[in-house]
Length: 420
Image 1: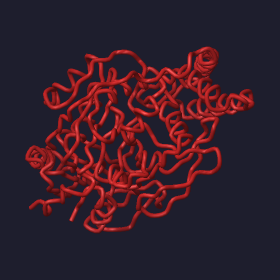
Image 2 (image 1 turned 180 degrees about the vertical axis):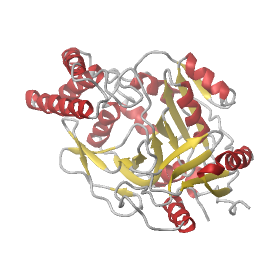
Image 3 (image 1 turned 30 degrees about the horizontal axis):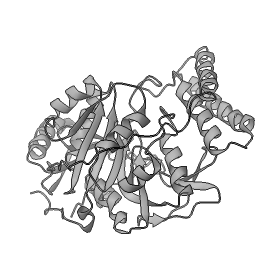
């Protein structure tokens, strides 16, 4: 039987929230993201999708055409797209997630709770990477040259951190929320940042205006890093124009009197090292490096001339379009050997279709690494060897039995999925 119904009405739910998703050319990824967003344990939220025709088809495939605010937009400028989403938002808080990410079902519950304190202007959660287990980003600050620095944080309680001098608390565009009044006060996102450093610019402007940011460890999303015009499916870099352009814009805006030559030197070295690592891993050819680095230089040159302060336009009054979550508040854990996958997946799909949040563990009798992914219509699937490591900090071989291993993995996600 499914676990007891998870509590779906928390104090955070009195805070109405608009969730903005920007998507372009990623229909499959958007459909998966929407599946996760439509199964949140939260009662007062709306979905705003700013997308191209490919994304509109994904909204239809997800069965959400009449339950989301759909804004057609087919220009490669994520800041402008997010500003359109903010303009359509009716929630007291606006949350942001990327189309190649999927939230845990308690994502909004945790991310929005700190806004019960009127001092809080923004929140940011933790992001897990492509394997669904290791963290991609946790708590960080950012300096006036746009460089991020890890911040030590213990436990999973939300914390209002004090950043070092001339730093701001950094939130990730794929897992953040900002009080709508603050977004309107600041003019939303600066559309000069068409991609990269867009949310970082907002972080610094928020800090300079006195806004407080809370880091929320339990507000988790899984970020897949889908292919784009800048990278292939295997994350191989193909173009750095936007990285260069946004970096130049950022330095002009936030460090006008600084030594830009040194900062850009750091950027060039960082990207050269990144490409060289990909050459060693045979993701790109050495001969490709020159063209990719040339795109970085072209971006830097263009960013040095780009107009700054292209802010959102004034918006009108909007009504909240509340989404009725597909999640019924129940959770079911399924455990099976890999060779039983077809049978157990059929059972998982049947449960998910009823609104149950399903965590499925497929084990093999070996030491393969674990990976966790999200499958439609709403199934969290973790696969790997009984003796294999899940967290990449663990020893390569874990000596245990299947039942004990499953219990250990369940404990790791117990809070974020409200498993009783």
